Length: 273
Image 1 (cartoon, rainbow, N blue to C red):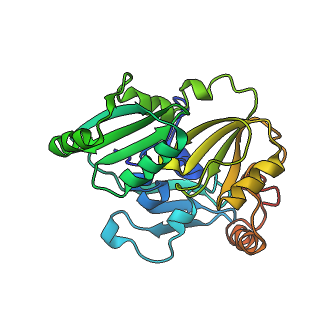
Image 2: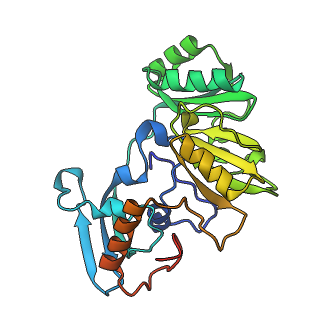
């Protein structure tokens, strides 16, 4: 399986799209992100050059780690031609559990359990209920179930597929802006008005809100994170969190090295490139 559980968001999903978008599903905090599983790529740059980076198996990966650089670049650095990616075995046994909690209790539990040997593979909070998934050997999962003392999830494992694909009620009929906010998993509740959904054990926070872009990003920064305009809002502005001057310089130099004429997906990430 692709352990980082990339969303499909439709029947036309491709592996190239998975790597270019760099999106991961509920399992990401416990196994790693998309870029952690990329072994190598072959790409076509904006200069018409075909370049190969990395390898096809883990022991042969060498040289500059440009393969991971392509992850999440939205095709702005090159057209992906070939991708070598690591897969993991499907878990022997999985189960979903749930329990009614308030936010502080849910956040504490998610962070505490993440540091224990509990076969945890997903944890989220919908504002009323803490949901978790356990994956691994049957004996280990059953032992963790006894220790956690939670209820069987009424939707079972399907719940995590619906979360991954944004089919839960929270993601339907969005009239406000949908923000994807990344913060440390231990961060307290953010001082922003709106409706929240907490994923990745507290590290990924979805917010439906009419708050201004400036306020959302300021609060996210103060919490040690960043905010992405995921759906709705002014798509002509900066969708991604503004870069610091030093990081922006690095991005600009990379773009010049791979696509000096700026012909690949111009403005898809940032307006300058």
